Length: 114
Image (cartoon, rainbow, N blue to C red; front, top):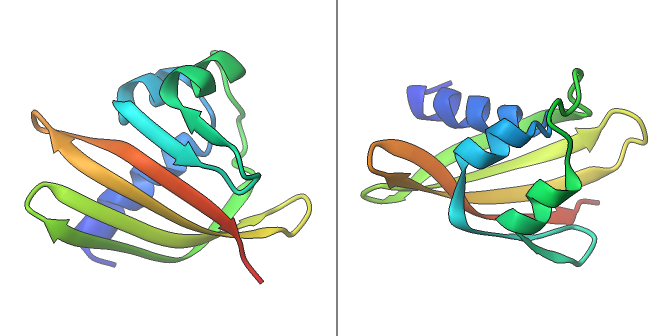
């Protein structure tokens, strides 16, 4: 796995623990998510839905992970998650932007996988 893949896989997996501090630090202020449920959520909405501590054990297994540089300072991640409790699979894609030396996610979309 490349250094680019390693960096962004780590960031994506951090968010899968649903810790408020991680969402504050990693999501861009203009973050937007098109969820697999069909809902559209921004950073403020997500922060109001979570607790400080999040969850200890990640609920997802990540496969087929790729981080692709789309332009200078813009990276797209593409991957599949499998929920460990119910087996549901999601195709996922995130857009990341380097903001003053820190990578922040500004868009995410999850779609049910077959």
